[in-house]
Amino acid sequence: MSPTLLQEVSDDHHGLAGAKNASYAHSDPLSEIPTLSGVDISADGSTPIIDMEALLGPHRSDAIKQIGLACERKWVFAVKNHGIPEMKIDNMLDTAREFFHLPEEERLKFRSADPDSVIRLVTGFQDKTRNVFVSRQSLKFHCHPVEEYKSHWPSNPPSFRENVGEYCESVRKVEVAILEAISESLDLERDYIDKLLKGHYVSINYYPACQESELDVTHGVRTHTDPTLITILMQDDVPGLQVINDDKWINVNPIPNAVVVHVGDILQAISNYKYKSLLHQAIVNCEKERVSIASYCYPSDDAMIGPAKKLIDKVHPAIYKDFTYREFHESMWRVKCSTAKRLDLFKPSSD
Ligand code: OGA
Ligand code: NI
Image (cartoon, rainbow, N blue to C red):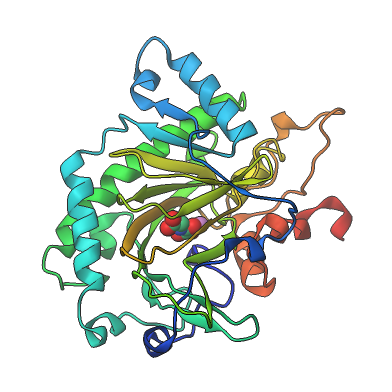
């Protein structure tokens, strides 16, 4: 079985033709917030920045504490000195742009209605019931081990397989190291989460520059949480990512060569709701196209992703039942929900 995919509910079966014909407007991110009221856009600056080099030195326990606090209070942090060479990042972003600049028929070769296919292109679409246009196009694919999946990836642009393969291998190492730190921050064994892991998945996101129009509202990606342990997001230099923080939307603007890491639904469950899955969205820019690379490790089908036993006691009763990644994945496609509320199915009271 393949992993759950980073996507909004119902962003699947819409062609690029719709994207081409839609008129764009300023995005209206606030209309999609599921549970919060009275929000406003705040300036960037409150996202913690973790220096990953500290995890390798004598100050490891301090860095772990910082990561734990970031997961508990902000649900998101940026990571610098992660060890992915700048050149590999630049190559990845260039390749992503080149792919999305290819003629439509070339890209459409990767279109698939099967959410479990090893690679698929997801296109922008109009949500007519809400009169919104969701402009993100993305190429989503498995990448671990790279050699197993490479032959399914585009051979155009010619640099794709090499550049993407190198980025994927590097980013996986970063994720494994961060998950070790997160396990320790929860007072679990260092490899508690790593032991659950199986594959790795990447979504290359492309947000075309939009034109203005009074008619439609355009979103990059509407408010959602990711069905992941953690997501590692590499952004180019165009802002667009917004996250919820203290009931406000915060712009998480790109920091050169840093990655954004945020909590996903599965970590919310494993941590017994100590760490919360981050509500986030992407807005579009009317002058510049934007590229981001989201990636995540996913557990094996039988991995138990309910709350870690060690985190359950009288004061902290289990918020979720035990459940496997397979059960989570299968429920993803049944419950049409794009936030961590999809975990409610696994609450003890939901029998
Ligand atoms: C995603 C996502 C945000 C961005 O891929 O799940 O939320 O800024 N991307 O591209
Ligand atoms: Ni996301």
